[in-house]
Image (cartoon, rainbow, N blue to C red; front, side):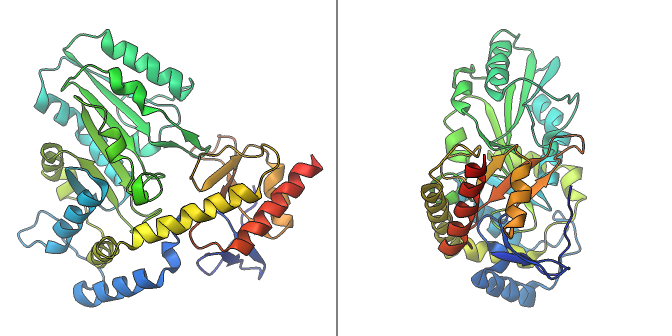
Length: 366
């Protein structure tokens, strides 16, 4: 696996430490926030008002309003009843998994907890008794539903899955879970780190879709550091669950994101700029799909910015034509590498023309 170093933040292009310039089609900065001038202005204002960081527990005697304000706006943005912002998406997942048994026992009389981990579920949701699942996501989900329907009411079930497959992109049909019986003993926990800011109306994410599954407990968590450009994470659920998590020692003992970024998040939501950038991203995705009309080269999802291939020769072909994608083993070093092309809101039509041309050339070479 080739490694390239750079001294500058990539955007549409990247210049390596060896002074080579490439078109950049990688990473997870789907909305191009790393180079967004409005966001930088909001962040600068936040730094002037709040300083560089907040060295305190969020549960301390003195509390900054900006965190509660950002959480309220973000809950409204996603449509969820309540939100809790933490320092990273990974910690959002691990906080939930550390507290899930306390949450389960607080809602019902439970003798046993059964965990159901989806195929390739992100490590953020790895918890007690985790073991990799080898079935397809659809077959796994059907088996989970059947097991829950056949289990006793004294068994709690914790279902852990991503909203969208990664690193090999895959769309999941959550309507499978619509037939679950209403139960306080069933918990559906979803990591939407690669969906928030991309899927749903204006990129508002997965909550409204998941909310159609009635009668069970639902928790969504996500990194904010991908599409939305905020170095932090978020947990979405009903107010009771969020209040319980907020009282957790795992929450109280962890440092929060810098308050300047919470100010920037508030401003991005108030000015509807995320929706504008989401529109730009969708236009770029559709333009590339129209230009790449020949052959079945990629695994992809409609209106989704990631295009994947298990053909390792594609990565080298792209490099030879001055396009840098990604190709590395993830999440385990033993996993097979995936060539992953990512379109962002930053890309211009000439970038997408070049990418389509080089991909069609690869197809023609056979």
